[in-house]
Length: 293
Ligand SMILES: C[S@@+](CC[C@H](N)C(=O)[O-])C[C@H]1O[C@@H](n2cnc3c(N)ncnc32)[C@H](O)[C@@H]1O
Image (cartoon, rainbow, N blue to C red; front, side, top):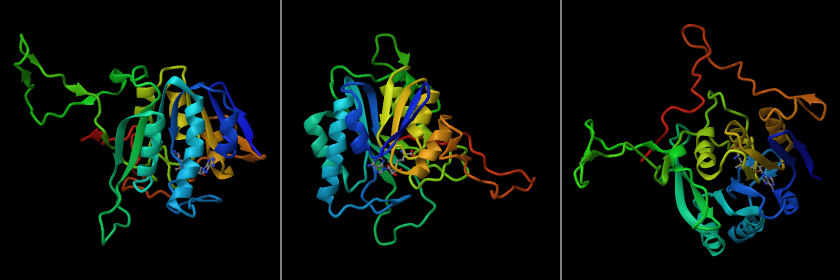
């Protein structure tokens, strides 16, 4: 059974996206960001992220993707996160239905367990697709980054009639280095696959405008909705697990209670203190170290 919770900016559906999506109107959202389970055996509360075969997993993805494409406006964009293993299935299918404009590599480092007999997995692909390659939103000036030329002096473009310094900013390339969400970051929530706000910020700024509707069929901790709200967008998030819906209701300030129970942020009271007795390591919410290769 599906429950619906909302305030002025955000709607949260507690249910299976395959049941919720058919209820959303055709062509009603500007941006879809989908971060599904990857079929790699992760545990999401009561949900076990494993399918009997790659083909069955792909068939499940095609079902919700079909719905996402239906609800997307003709000028809309769809970003799909996927595992390296599943990407070929989704890429081949998506290019029959949309135009795949970029295959983004979100990469990060890991201090955790490292592979010893092969190269460790330190990236996740993101497919950026549009319905109409001639008419879609892409707000270049909202996402430009520093163009790192490697030179200290300003480089001059002598090919121009009047030599002028090269532009010092550029549209990010398709490899994005953004640290994963760590326990000590203010944005941290208890979820095995929370995505960084910095990642969502770039996507939402680039591919939607203030007042647009952003849809996330696999809400998790509702990072998409939280960032959409901060950037003046409306959003719809769907999540099947109670545990994560509770996070969304609190994070989006839709409700202070769930099933009569008060909702609290993660308890980090046991964070180590530094030498001055101050709780350590509060990292700037916008994550230092964000850069592109
Ligand atoms: C990879 S996580 C999303 C993480 C999210 N992007 C974030 O930043 O927190 C995928 C989520 O999809 C949820 N989920 C799995 N199957 C679902 C379904 N059929 N409908 C809705 N949610 C589902 C899982 O419980 C999990 O929280």
